[in-house]
Length: 141
Image (cartoon, rainbow, N blue to C red; front, side):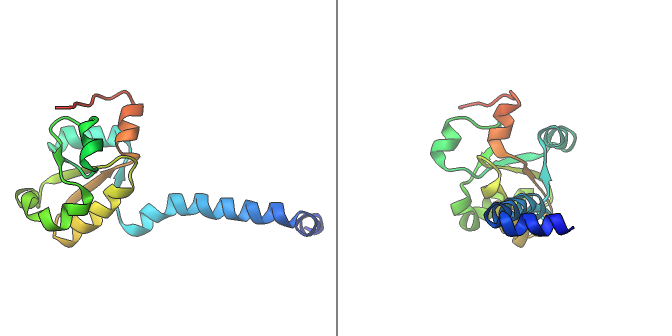
């Protein structure tokens, strides 16, 4: 223990960087759990879509959506979701998988839809980037 204290004193700058890195990594893993957002890794998301006939909601901007999206995805950018939530009213109790580019905007959409009473929401962990990296099909139609 004495050596550890000596190391911290001698290498205080390195120790501060280590603490910062540990905090950032921990925050990345813990934040989704604390927010109550249900995130599904690719394989679980595919299973969720197939077994539950889930609706896919893509909340990216128009340009990103046009570059490629999951087939039959409903497109409503997260910035307009509050105003357009009524368009999803018929899916209020249906399973919905929310996707965005990397996973951040889908969490925002999850929170917004949750406030509107949607009950079976999940987010695609890693977003469409993870989908593409898993060599899964996208469409531009």
